[in-house]
Each structure stands twice: as C-alpha cells, then as structure tokens.
Length: 154
Image 1 (spheres, rainbow, N blue to C red):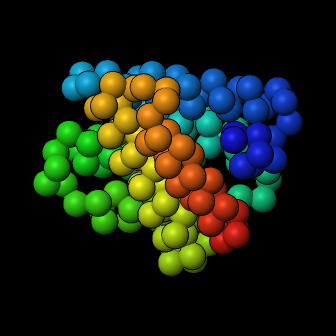
Image 2 (cartoon, one colour):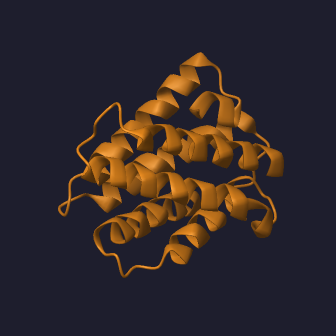
Image 3 (tube, helix red, strand yellow):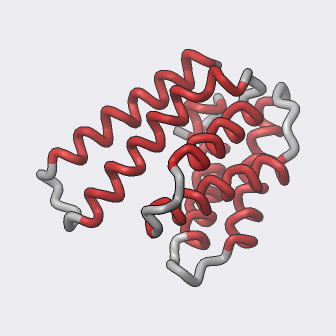
C-alpha cells in the first residue's frame, strides 16, 4: 500500500513501510503507548513521501499529527462506546484531504468505509480472532471500498 499509494520504488517502499511499522509499534501498547515517538516515525514517513513525489505540498510534521490524531480517536472509539464515530471519520477526512490536496467532502466516502472496516476489525478481535469468522471478509470488503473511493477521489 505504501508503494502503490505514493508511487514509490521498491527501496523507498521498504523504507516507508518500516517507518509506518515502527510508528504502529510505538502506538500499539495500550494504555502506555508513545504518541510522540509514533508522530516522529510518521513525520519521517511523510518526509520520504514528499521527497519521493516532489509534487505534494505537504508539511510532514502536520501530516504526522493528522495521522496519529485519527489513531488516537480510533483508540477512544474502540475503548469507549460513547466516543462519536463522526469525529473519527472527520479526522480521516482531514488527513486524506491534506495529504492528497483534495476537497474534503470528496474524501468522506473513503473515510467512512475505513471507519466501518475498523469497527469490523475491532469486533473480530473482541470475538477471538478466528480466521474463519465472516467479519474478516466484511472488513476486507470495506477496506477495498475505502481504497477504491480514495483512488476515485484522488
């Protein structure tokens, strides 16, 4: 996804994927994660994206903040059923529209489908991570819908 999403070659794709992996590892522990470390890794990722494409007018620090903000909102939504889904959808709209320099409303279908996929994934984890669970297929469908909507908008 890193290579296809930003047109990176194999070496930069590997480097970018490493930054994203490290960011996720720093973010993952609950509740004692490292948001600053995650933001730094995502800053490195977006700096690599910017230097690779040469076309994007983005600030890697700002993009990293937007990225980790939706992670934070997802974590709240995941662990607190009172957290509103629309804030999470809006955080993804904000990230996508910023990174891809697109009109925010054109990003909403991709963001909503991505949040739907997150909810299915969270339910799958709660149910015990059974590989035969139909939730996995539903999650895949929503992810494909999200990426298709993102591609259509960009």
